[in-house]
Length: 142
Image: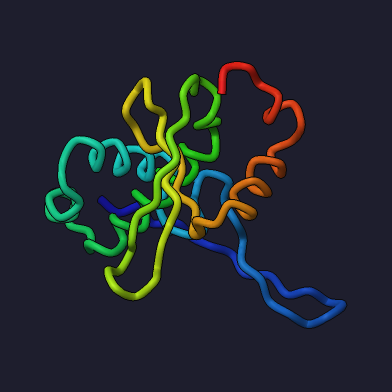
């Protein structure tokens, strides 16, 4: 599916630079419409990225990029800590024997990972929670 748009180019008379017309319904980072991007993301939630790419005649990396952007915006739109009543903290080795560790924060009631931090030391973990603010740290449900 292809949408052909005639994009006008303009020249700034002050600085002599050229720039192109932008459309509010086209995502700059994916060169697809917002509606198409949402559709691709929804398809990726139901089936593997490789199948979505084949179905739509798109490249795997483009579909993966669209899915990653959609997931990041979905995560940033909600507060993963909001409904947490019991927080589990664990560490994992990213690469065995190399000293690469990460801290995994888990909602124990729902059994799902809510955050993964690129460090595991106590001082930075305390700083991470303090950066969320005093109201967050004083919640009685965490």
